[in-house]
Length: 156
Image (cartoon, one colour):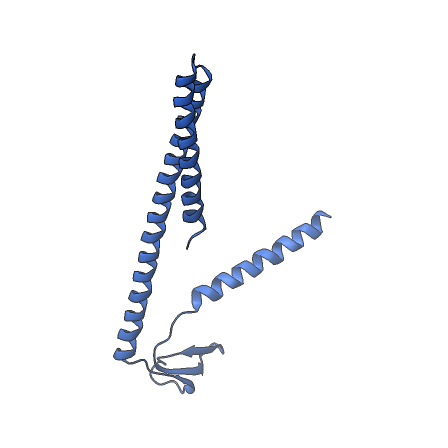
């Protein structure tokens, strides 16, 4: 059982190393021709600049990227970065509005509980009526604040 796990581990590590090497080696090639030749040890070498005196066979020609294309690519990249920054700022503003709305809602609920407690402890009808009016107003405020918070959280 342990040998099987070890074999799987070795295969996984090998795969990860191959993928890491592949990613590290790959990159952007801008223009030029790739050449292939066999060195003195018999190994096949692929390069974009073969050494002097070696008979190198052209493999493929990569398209040249002009300065205009590079500038356009950089401009597109900057535009995307700016859009991401703007989206991030909007997201932060939305989160701040949601936080403020939650605090306001919590404060309104706390006040409503205080008014309700005072209403229940009132000694006479006029005091009770006063606190009942405040509780009703606070309940309406809580409903409005909850709707505002729900709209903020569900909006874009």
